[in-house]
Length: 235
Image (cartoon, rainbow, N blue to C red):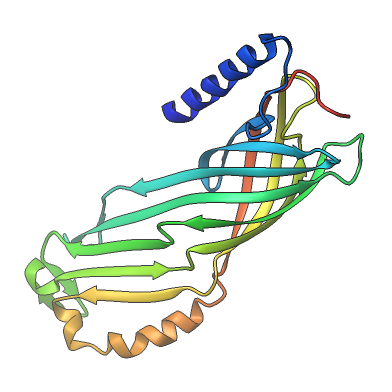
């Protein structure tokens, strides 16, 4: 978050210097607007460029990050305690195009694509005390460790709609966006030791993976705070 805020202040300072230099317009390579976003895919920042001859079209480039990694202990009864260790990360670098079909409205449609360097969810399970399963007593070392991993495609598609301008008419603007990512077909893998080595889990994994084939989409809802880097925008 500190990096994102520093980036915002840097661009804002650049714009102030550029506008005071004989009122020259900033370089076309610098974004005309900057947005901070928070939602399902975490916290992120985006730069926005309005197409010169098509003011209803805006190109956006940015990224977002969300991570969760915390141990959880569960009592299964009879003093049987297991520990779950989820490892969940959504890191996205994304580009998209916004289209505002109505000139006097901030309603927009958007579509784009992104890249994620950690397109998976990982889960580790191990016993912290003797475990009883189906009347069978097992020591923690006999229960062993289970590592599960669900992986999607690194390249994702996106489509959505919302309200709000990436380059506000005034200095600040607020909006929201509702969309959906397409992550592709999930793939399941498992590494384990202990009692599961005596089971037919390897044979069941393809069937479990087929049952998960519908988990290809990730709904996305986010709120957006936008800042205009130009003093006057086209209406």
